Amino acid sequence: MATKKEIDEHLKIALEEVGEIRPWFDKEVKEWIFSHRLYPVECGGESKKDVIENYPKYLREFIKHRLNKKVDRLVEKKAKGRGGLRPGSGRPLGSKKTKTTKTIRMKVYMAEWIKNHEDEIEGVIAGEKKIVSVQRRVRARSRR
Image (cartoon, rainbow, N blue to C red; front, side):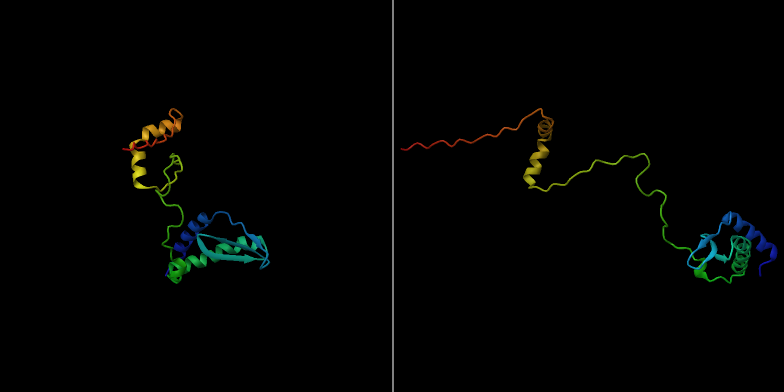
């Protein structure tokens, strides 16, 4: 069983974590409401003042139940998911995106020829060299 002193210590820590209690008006229920993502406690009232006064009382009850282990484990259960950004994930800071590339499929003998003549092809791309087509001449056969 948790002592009053122990509950007060935990309540003080919880209120520091929650910070300022700023209720908002919920149009669906037509009441002022306050809740915090760290604690599964929600408080509602007719005015902001009611909520600000009552939220610490509700939080105290939750802490009391938690210390006495009366809170269901599903309420306390933490998800095992990664929950967003993980250390070391993504592109390292300061690195630049690589240029986009395109994959072209071709016959193996053509790819090998291009690999063997890379320097010449770069010259063509840079405009230093030109591609000239050569026509084959077929010689006429002599008749005997």
